[in-house]
Length: 118
Image (cartoon, rainbow, N blue to C red; front, side, top):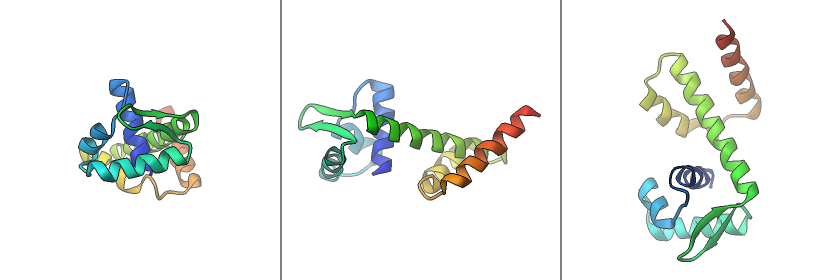
């Protein structure tokens, strides 16, 4: 679910809107799979979805998606700091961003902030 929220958020930031077709292309998944997940997100109160009208993030959905994006950016920054290529850092961040404990993320944030002060 988080991956879908992140993609919806990114599409809305870039294009101003998100559709199931856009999400399907972006994630390389079938349209029916996207529709199912978007319906689940709608039921969870994270998006408002009307067939053939597009997808809108709710306030809660926007907050969750922004947190996911921040987590991703933090991990990419950390990986690049230790010398990982940006493309690999983005790919690796996608793989681990949903599995780290909040405490770990806070420590990474503090660590990076300390490096910037030097």
